[in-house]
Amino acid sequence: MSYLLIVDDDEDFATAVATMLRGKGHDVRIELDLSAAVRSMTERRPDLLLLDVMFPEDSTGGFELARTMRWRNETLKDVPILMLTAVNTRFPLGFSSKDIDDDWMPVTDFLEKPVDLDVLTERVQTMLAARQRRRG
Amino acid sequence: MSTSVDPTPRFAYELPFSPAEASPSAPVAPDAAAPWREALLIGNVLWFLRLRWAAIAALAAFGLAGLAFPGLLQALGLRPQADWPFFAAALLLVANLGFLGHARLIVRNPLRRGAAWNLWAQIVVDLLILTMVVHFLGSLETPTPFLYLAHVVLACIFFSRRQSLVVAAIASGLYAICVGMERLHIIQTPGIYLDPLLRQAMTSHPAFPWLTLLSALGIYFVVWFLASHLSELVRGQELKLAEASRRLTLAQQEKTRHMLRTTHELKAPFAAIAANAQLLLKGHCGALPEQAAEVVSRIAARCRRLAVEIQEMLQLANLQSAEEQPTPVRLDLAETVRWAIARVGAAAQERRVTVEQTLEPASVVAIEDHVKMLLTNVIANAVVYSTEGGSVRVRCGEAPSDGPVITVEDGGIGIPMDKLPRIFDDYYRTEEAVRHNRDSTGLGLAIVRRVAVSHGIRVRVESAPGRGTLVTLRFPAAGRGESERKEGGHVLSADRR
Image (cartoon, rainbow over all chains, first blue to last red; front, side):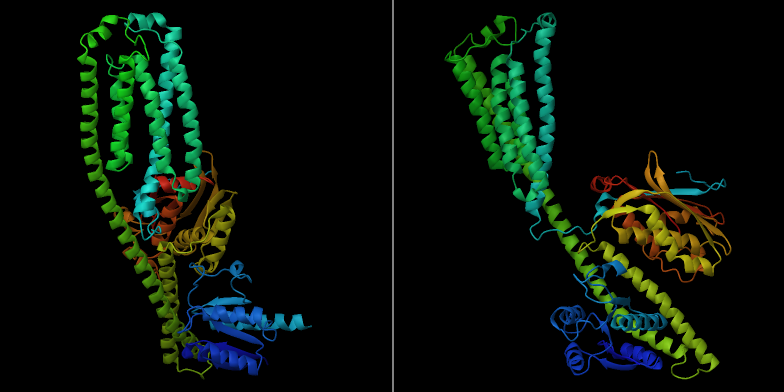
């Protein structure tokens, strides 16, 4: 069982994803805003973060949080991040795997909303397995 | 590349599109007039340079005629000229090369704003050399002084009224100096005419040369007045048009931004609905009664269709948005076609449609994401509108005369001839297409149109109901796309939904 944190301002979406992942045996917590997410991660480091991009107070808040974690936080810099987004604000035509690099989007992977929950679950399992392998 | 076309006749349709649409939302600076004027001036600089090559050639030819065919000139009553035509041609040649070098610097970096200086230098040098020509040919007895008018009129087109008045004054001054120096015997020339009586007639009375000079100067200023007035009227209209165009572009950009934002706002709650419908269907909230499961299945299916529609609306809006467009890169079309075929693999499998591919390398410079969208839409259309168990043939390669060409051919439902011209319209779907595939959004070919227009890709569609459709995509050869886009000389034709 892994501890997963979902950070998304859409409670309905976050709850649906959490239900699915809990059904797979994970411990899942939901945070609806970025400051609560930072507090939560300081209290307990997640094994994986599912992060939205756009928040009511900051349309690129998800990117900022990911950058802060990767470059300015020793404890959280290795947490795998799965970014969930309704629209790509950087590359208007949508993400592709090659777009993911540390220069602009320091996340491990992304999925575009609306997501297929099976695909999302599979992606989470793959990322957790990769993390496990890295830790040896 | 060879393409096999169904021998059964199909209707073909090609729709020319407006060059203005090539960059529907090109960014416009808040002060549109300055860059617009600079761009216009740069165009004038280049045109003026080309014109001067003709003048240089004419002078050199005149000099050569004097050397090679003196008898011919004499037969025409003209005096073969000595070295001055070559000297004048050489001076113009050197000057033109200098202007050309400077013009290239300006073209590379329009922010240097040097086009006006270049034009001024060209006009002043021209007027000086023209004065030499006027002197040697005959300042009073020949019509050559009227060549000054060409520069006065051009200055009216290039510059403001006041600046063109300065050009008219320089031309008048140079001509007056020429005539004055000749009258004072500071410079002498026999002129072009063999018969000395012509020149003598012009100077038989002491007032004649000055009257001729004053008449010419009067004409220069009358022509300046008329030409500058007309030019200002035209320029005023053009500025109004540029301003109207700028406002329209800004409005379009604002509309696009608003649409992107609205679509996003729609997409987020929709993602929640889709996720919750999936939860119910996958039994995470307990088993559903059969009827309830059917209702939730319909919700989920509708969600999937809406997801595709939202995605296509976003793609279309983004194609119209000039903000942060990706950079064009060199692509192997064969690779991109392979990628697009893989994307539609599931749909093909579902409909038992075979996709046959004959792919040879073909290089283009394009925005990869956009070309992928175009190809995915064209190939997906061929698959979706094929009959079950049918086949789609995709070919890619370099045609010897046409450059990179892709053809996508199916044996599907086809498109009636009268509907071909509309199939690229936003949200247009033929009744036949809707009957065959209810999931059609009507946006796929609008995306194809936008990408084709922005990349200078020529799209041709041949189709007939029940006999399938052949789509031919002709790409500009690598490196040619940009210039073709600027010229706007491409053609888009129709496709099918």
